[in-house]
Length: 190
Image 1: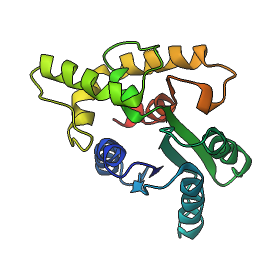
Image 2: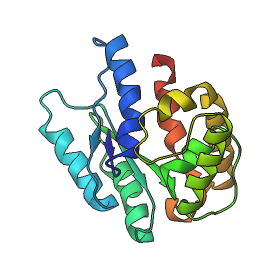
Image 3: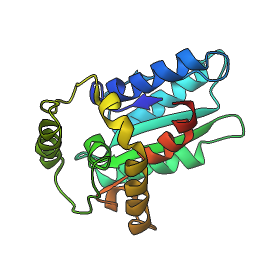
């Protein structure tokens, strides 16, 4: 898994990696690389990491936010995942429009309004504070543990958004996320 984020995504998916790798060491190995590049460079780095791997990867998950990246870059990354996939390696575009915090919020409620990503953090702080869990910070290491009990709700809410966004490019699917696709694949290992 290669992420555009260098703090939030590696912390969240790192917790998932630790659970899976320790529980199924002979069956599945998850690797996380927080690259911190734009979407097109992110795909190229993911492809290089995959090509350089001695064992190869069957699935390469490219996790990125749309942020303020140009629409053509956001959409091209998703297109490259399809066009560059082979029988040996499948690339998956796991984008969030506008950011991963949308995925976090979907654990607590359905959100259909196209808000700027800076609006998500106060909403998360409000929810977490109400539960006595403090404020939301981008590099918070316990987000997976906090969110896990609500995973099914998040998947359901993300699938609703996916239906609403059917036929749209990732850059136009706001709000929208594909993180649920990855979590549905990993859920049985958690």
